[in-house]
Length: 80
Length: 247
Image 1 (tube, each protein chain N blue to C red):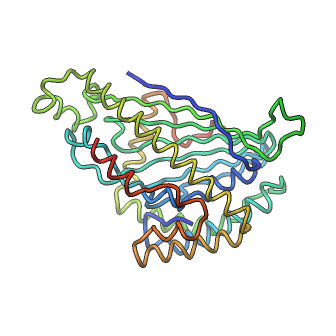
Image 2 (cartoon, helix red, strand yellow; image 1 turned 90 degrees about the vertical axis):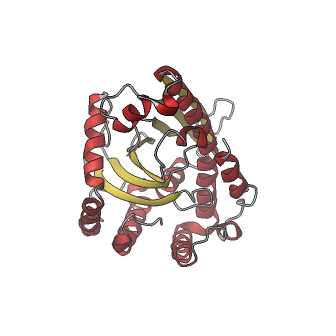
Image 3 (cartoon, chains in turn red, blue; image 1 turned 45 degrees about the horizontal axis):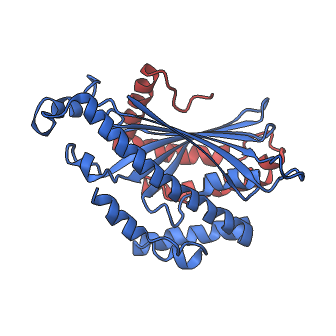
């Protein structure tokens, strides 16, 4: 799997990615997924990533981009 | 001004495999410019069965010299990728857009993945996946008060002899050219990942990717990829990069 933009999060990202791919291929794609089995691992990964994004100022950039694209009648990451 | 691009193509792999490969596509031998990818959010809607994912990609910036000389050096850029897999209707919709420098150039790419049912092939062809691609490229240089860089640049210097419109147009033309080149690479990358899944199975492919990532980190080389994945030798990434920087 690919690296995280925050090297300190690579281990938890790896664990989450492995879980997701297994769940996606063995459950989701077979239409058997009722819940997201990897939620716990995702929360751990996200906690690490959020800290790193804050430190790098990426959270601000993301918020700004979402705001800008809303102005332009586009949506980012909102469900279609 | 805005430029649109539309293209249809297909992969010789079943739809479930293609959607899996989409999530697994980095790293691949054609993605050395993708430095990192992170999942920002993921949500399974229990009623519709739709899975939405938002990822943040970090790419090494390669603005062509023709554009780059007017602007501060762009070394890397962030791309926001959102996707929605609809397992019941067998459809995957994806969107990528650049997050930074979007006042200079905005590239929004949409893809729709569906199983291919060709009319001249009676067997319900479950082994192919159709992709519809649309890209929207626009430059708002000089027309957006929020973009201080562009405003400062358009007030004089090298920009002086250009009209805002002609600058935007040039940036869009270059952006279109780069997008077409990038599209070829991204398709090849997907194919390599798909072949890996087919030949080695999911677990082996994942393990190898993990080892490759660790090895790349240690050695800082991507070239070893070509010896591991078949079909990666037909392209000389180095030449390609040199050619790009001459633009």
